[in-house]
Amino acid sequence: MGDVIRHRGPDDGGIWLDAAAGIALSHRRLAIVDLSPAGHQPMSSASGRHVIAFNGEIYNHLEMRARLEAEGLACAWRGHSDTETLLAAIDAWGLQAALTAAVGMFALALWDRQLRTLHLARDRAGEKPLYFGWQGEGHARALLFGSELKALRAHPAFAAAVDRDALVQFMRHGYVPAPRSIHRGISKVMPGMVVTIDASGAVTRNEAFWSATQAMLDGTANSLVLPEQEAVNELERVLRSAVAGQMVADVPLGAFLSGGIDSSTVVALMQAQSSRPVRTFSIGFHEEGFNEAEHAKAVAAHLGTDHTELYVTAQQAMDVVPLLPSMYDEPFGDSSQIPTRLVSHLAKQHVTVALSGDAGDELFGGYSRYAITQRLWGKLSRIPLPLRRAIASALRSLPETAWNRLAAFGPGGLRGSNGYARLGEKIHKGARAMCSPALDALYLELVSQWSDPASLVRGGTEPATVLTQADPALASLAGVPRMMALDLLTYLPDDILAKVDRAAMSVSLETRVPMLDHRVIEFAWRLPMEHKIRDGVSKWALRQVLYRHVPRALLERPKMGFGVPIDHWLRGPLRDWAEALLDPRQLEAGGLLDPAPVRRAWAEHLQGVANRQHQLWNVLMFQAWKQSVDADRNAPR
Figure 1 (tube, rainbow, N blue to C red):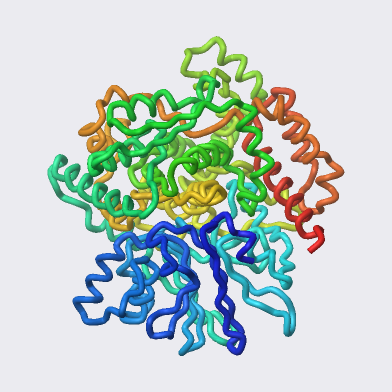
Figure 2: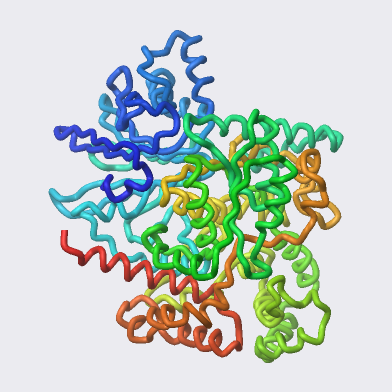
């Protein structure tokens, strides 16, 4: 089980087991802090009571050591690893108190030898993954847990089938929302939670040591009342502290730089606190509309970083596609997985740790869909629902290609940034959105790939999530704050953070996300909305921080995203690969998907009647993943 996730820790490996208790831990180590054997895992606490397998970093572990020493609770330190610090804190304060005191990202398995209980815990925002579940029957029955599903599948007891309900969710979102996984009976530990399992195998507790929902509610209830420049000063202080804490490592460290607001802010604050040029990395594409490298280069030049950029061809990007099933280990449909892998591979050639600007959109109102949805709902809600449905039907009566042809006669704004007119796709999506009975339903429609995913999956029904069924805890949040909250709880951990973790760890690169320091999250939710979105401009306060370090002229441009031209590739160089996976006999043989809607979408895409790249990419990623898992299962052991 440890060997198959060697990429997550190529520097060292270890196994600890207690046959009498029926527990075994395996660990793979990517050495970041304390490169000596004193950091070897699994690690036992000084008291001998606790044994841990720990993935991640505790950024404030030196402060925790100092506190333990001041309280007279420190052990005789064997080294200076953060794992040893955490174990000492657990011995002294207990697990909940130790995790509450810790600032970091992690997934861990902790065995309490005295109480014969296992604790599985995951960091506050969900940066690090952790799966668990029971498999096998009778004496062969075993509780399996690990950082990736491939570790669980390596155990002889593993026999979990595809969870059809989770597959429905995947087809809608392009990811499987926690706590489900693609395998029936295998769950994800939720962010900020500790799952406790006793010697009989029963889950006795599933409790939070930190709650994003509570942080958001507390923040909005205690909104900052400060002059705007003081609020900006405080935001910079909090961000600067988070960045400084995450720059601590005993190995080379750098940052991803796209030239956008978020990554530029992180790099600017890194460089402001570094005595030498920070290493920065960006990927460039030759295709117009997909290249941010020139903007990143300009920001890097202004800040004086040691910048490395790599322009990749379409073929180099497409060469990543066959690696995706194994890399993501669970169906994953966000096509920015491709450039994320490419920039991770580039960075790994020079550094072992890279900081990223992720979470700026979710915390500071960066996605354009927030303002668009609120504005659209404000207009739609004034029109009776039956009339809206009639208008939507009329709009959909004209094919997407016809709308695209009309775009050629309209203003340039009707054309996408890559020159491909997508007016028809937007109008058809908007027409479906018009039928929404409430803002939540409208937002769900706008973030869905397949609008009716249950009709695609045979025998599957869609389980409720906070996106499909209102969470009473979020009742006090409305409009843009509500959408931001939904993204922080779902899209951020299950899509963005999963994407970055798997891509980076596939090349043994550790990534860190300063904006997910829980103190930054808590502060961001105390900022009034007018400090986030002002006069149609998103991330207002964050921009003010950045403008102190980088001229506004280098940053003011439309948001581009981090994508690749999947729509064109599917009609061209990836067509044969896609056709093989979407062959009706192949779909029918799997017994999971209804071939009819898939083939219809494929035909429409090939004919240019509609752009179905997102729906098709989800199906293709599932089919490729299933093919890979089946081949591995049937391979000789």
